[in-house]
Length: 190
Ligand code: 5GP
Image (tube, rainbow, N blue to C red):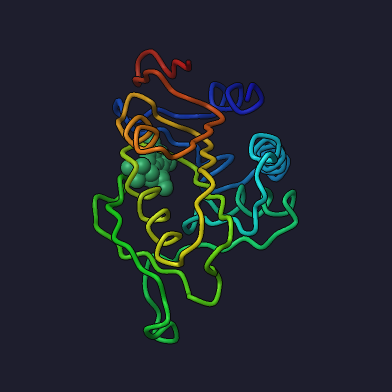
């Protein structure tokens, strides 16, 4: 998606050789026009599927996921990273190792918001080692629902998650695929 690639080139900041900071338009401040364009693109890519629900993980995936759900005219639900008291036992849960925080989270979704037989499209901001996507797919499967695929805003394709999950049969559509990046040379896309 050229609009996104141009924005990453202009405003993305590389930290070390494996973290891309996109705080000024995706991860902290959000550009609503870009989020809308991302939602429209995921709709175009996955419109060959019936999508009953869009699933993401808090917090960074929410803007793109809600825009995508608006185009599919379906609800968006986000997995929570910490269990709150009022969720009690009525949640699906999966463990996920956070790439950015280097901690293990338990992510949960209330059983009220994903149902058996539904087609669920997963959306996330980044794909690195694939832990977040695996946890979300796990939750969809626990619900007896069907993960139709994953829409990823930025795939760091030099990390193994994308190749591994595609080899396991998951359909993944990424709007920007990074081949290589470094603080010195910037970001190189496929
Ligand atoms: P994975 O679980 O695939 O290893 O990492 C994906 C998750 O980690 C995403 O949900 C995202 O929040 C975070 N993440 C991974 N790499 C980056 C990165 O380079 N920049 C930012 N901002 N977040 C990242």
